[in-house]
Length: 198
Image (tube, rainbow, N blue to C red; front, side, top):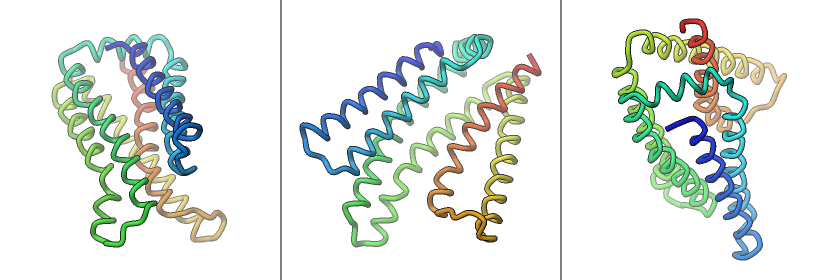
């Protein structure tokens, strides 16, 4: 699957989510929170599609080559269902918690539902890492290491600034953003390392 196809899939999902938000607002009289969630999901996917356009041509070509190999195809086959399940469980989790769940254990179980597809994505990434050649494995592990260190530093600095009352930060929101920041930093580090090694 080419990066251009990824871009169109992201754009289609984003437009579908925005259409659902519009239908919820104007036809189905959904609450503002539900409409806002679908609007956010749509905007996120459209932003992802826009980021594909900003990628340098050499990077798109490299990714096309990597995902054309057997390991890359297996990774993508595992990734797409996990991403779809993540979107559904995230929406369901937020929706159900906002409606109110009295039982604390049940509320905890519903809150961590989106973690399961993220775990599935991580397992797919680990399998991919084991199946690629040594140079690609080196690039991947260095990118993961760089991303982990940088996000840890930012998270630690944010905690110190919050403790010193320089900034105010909701701990729950900060924790939720760790994984997306890690993924984004990993992607940038992987691009830089690939340019360096190849």
